Length: 119
Image (tube, rainbow, N blue to C red; front, side, top):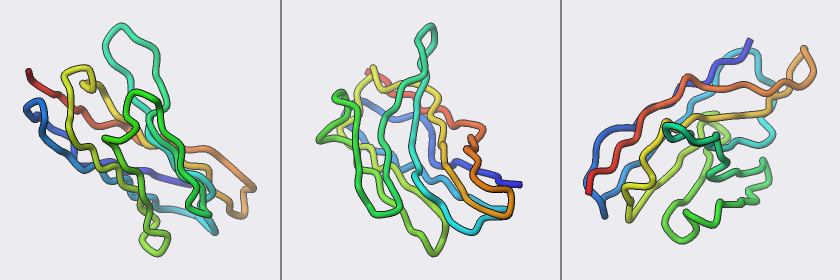
């Protein structure tokens, strides 16, 4: 019913930047909050950043001042601008969104995109 497709991951040197995109499609009347999570090998998945449909944002302490989340409601797309990347940012980044439709409310996940930061 709802699909989230991430793009923009890759390999970058420490100090570099990447921009992730998450495009939502399917039976969507509205998108409530959208967020980015990450999971590094051997670690639990953690919230990186979240943005509500009103534009309110919150970030993990580890990325504050370096990452910026934004969204384009017309395109049903969320973005994560990642600057001053560090090796410890290496992880699989996944998009998450709560959507509303004829089915009520559901929370969907994307397939994830790998971000690797070399030292």
